[in-house]
Image (cartoon, rainbow, N blue to C red; front, side):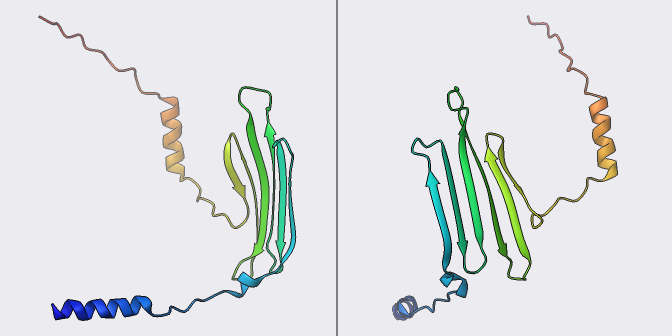
Length: 140
């Protein structure tokens, strides 16, 4: 029982101890530009931000097919910054009724499909499976 009391005191003192907080110098980067505009009817918007550490982001959206049964919001944007390794990174993207698509040199690209797999897929495409056979079962 004494063991649990001592353990509880140790855990409580560890929790109460002040944990150092590390802040990156990036957290104090000044905002150089901030734009935010929206149409009063909600049909479009535009925003942009630039910081003193070289980060820039912008996006704009528009409501498409407003008077139809299926209106859709399309948003396009970009972001650029310098990676911790010093490499400039730029991404552009679009999000709409077809989904989200991003482009940029820093996005990993899948390796090419091996030739044997491509040939197998072509064979499957050219030789569809036969229709399933239905067996008649005689019921008593």
